[in-house]
Length: 146
Image (tube, rainbow, N blue to C red):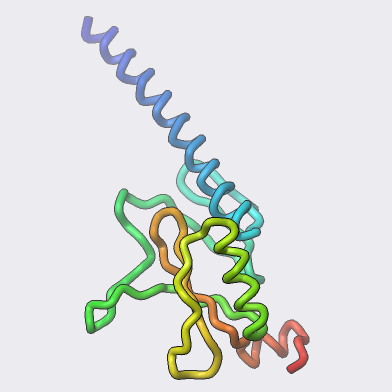
């Protein structure tokens, strides 16, 4: 009886694992590949590598209710990454595109420095920033004229 019960539990665990792996695959495809245009270059059951915005991002499976976000000294939730885009027109275009793709986005805002920004969120609530200014190093590296 115990042996049969153990096999049954193992079978359920395997089915859950396969289902979970399937959900992870759907999540990456739905969020990062389809909505953000990232290229999935590697994926296994606990990590993935995405190519997006001229960079590679290593995503690692974490425990439930964790995100990349952090809180500053005033207790305000902050993003961990800022994506630079080439000008206000590009920023507005991406913002509009994200809204059409039903990605959760914040308003375009002036934060008192050069350029404008907006934030967006993935399905896990990870918060990212988009800024309308390219760094001089990026412009030089990718030969973007000012």
